[in-house]
Length: 258
Image (cartoon, rainbow, N blue to C red; front, side, top):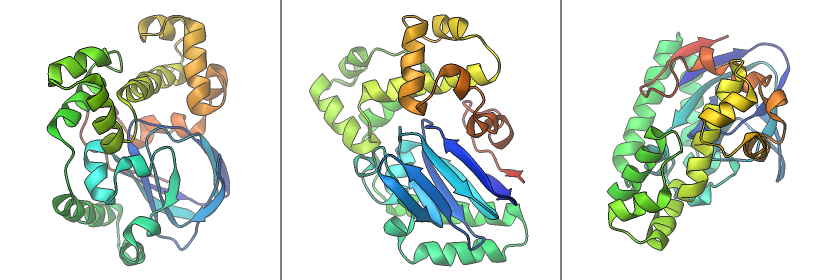
């Protein structure tokens, strides 16, 4: 998780990440979200895996942003991720009045560390009460992450002992994407962050498992709605090295990005 305090008006494009994104705002302000399904205003939100890139406008926002592995997001959020697939919804719709209680406690907290501890307790309680994903589904997700999206889905299905059809069905219901789309998202995430760090598209495509540079261009546009050159300048991605240091190596990161 990471803590953000945005004092002035800001508008950014939210870019998909291979995690479920949760934002809990505690400064009595709202996010103004413009996406594929229209406009939404929410004080706290949850965005499923591979949501379509959407624009967020905010002013005077104070929030904790959490990135949840889909392996824990399913029990923590309290719904199958297939119901959240590609969508951004108000967290109130999932947690009801508990969100207001949590926002009040975050606002009263004296430090970011105290706020992170409150979030820890909330998520841990919900995780214990929820239903875990099946071991085979969890194993396939971890293999996709470990291979940086380059694992062959058919081989993964064979190693679970499941048919391809069964893996597609169970994985989609519990993770919110097909295994193929999940691998595409993981591969894209690594590629687009390399573009942000200044690597050329041709090199990124060649070393990232893409057939060619046009394949990379296609995937970047599919997830961001823009070109690789434009995506490399997106503030949402540029903030990642500050908000999520060492991203991709696992663990948790607790950072105040004021």
